[in-house]
Image (cartoon, rainbow, N blue to C red):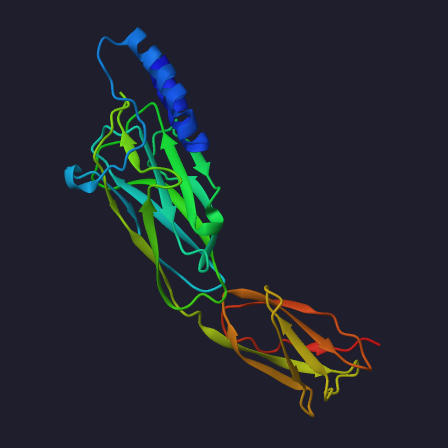
Length: 282
């Protein structure tokens, strides 16, 4: 039985990574090993859409979350388990203009021997194929079992509001199977990431000469992590101020002057920052 399970797991990964071209050869290999160990006919895990009408409580869902432009957000994928699932495959869809660079990891509730296999070939189009499979079944719900965690980068210019996280059949078909490789009816529940406008704060300070006098008409530059820069000029007392600075990012603040040199400073903005001062070097 162990070799049969291993053959089924190898089959699932073959389909995920190499597609339907390898389907016939994979089926022949699995059925051959299965018949030598079992005296019954088994349906081999071979994709399928796991439609929801017969799901009998088995649901895979994307848990909604929130994030801010320029930050990161993690979307959990949960399973309402019936206690007989050993494998599931699916494709997660997302808007690549809002979310990017998905990093997928196993959730905290999967069986210890679970193997994660990814198909990232269409990530640029907002699709990532995922297979997670084990020789052991999920523990029966409730509560919902955390199967996957998908971390995204949020675009700095992402608009406020929800962006959809959904399930699809391509490049990796939706399917759930039991230890015999039989398909299990499963429903799928989409989720979303709600983008909220990041709070904005003020960055201010003073630019002085080596002797401590305020330096007027010096140029102060603030540069964000995307190399977007803003500039301002110091007052007659050497004061400067940047308003409406988005939080959740690090910025490089520097000073340009014909008379003095200044060391740049890196600041992380999570509240109003004052006293970001600069002293000229001869």
